[in-house]
Image 1 (cartoon, rainbow, N blue to C red):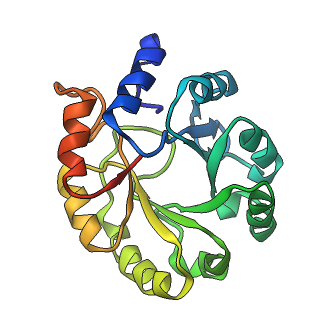
Image 2: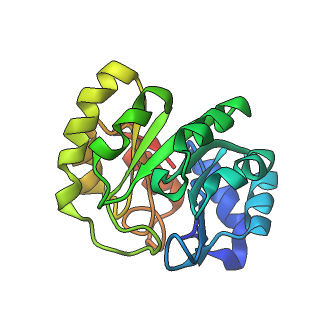
Length: 213
């Protein structure tokens, strides 16, 4: 939602709801873990009140464990965080589950699958970042592609859902779906600032049986 038109946020939310997305993907940035600020608490609360589809929370922030309760209370059904941003990532996952929510970890381009492998038995989602987090409109980083093959092999053992976020064009959706990705976070590469309605875009992408946020 950081890519949406905030001058008419209610219409944006209603249009996306009517288009049949699966989730509103909410990027929370603190200007410290990533060099940008994004999605204030008031934005999150407002969208949560009017949206008909569930919200997630992508916490691109330092010490995310301190804020799990807050975003759970604001309605997040899935909470993603970056394991390197917290000294006790397994505890963060346990706390998210204790609140009755799904837990996800986000893997930065420079973070290896091996570095987070110990967390894979206890997470619900693994989101691979295919750009460096913090800004929209960046190019897709092809060097992350081997991570999907690694995660697909581990998914068979642990059962998590593979998500992807960053420069996800329609061509990338087809490529990544073949590599085992199930959940696609759409931004300016496919969904926003286009000359088509959200309904048309979602219908065309949905024909590929894709989960969208």
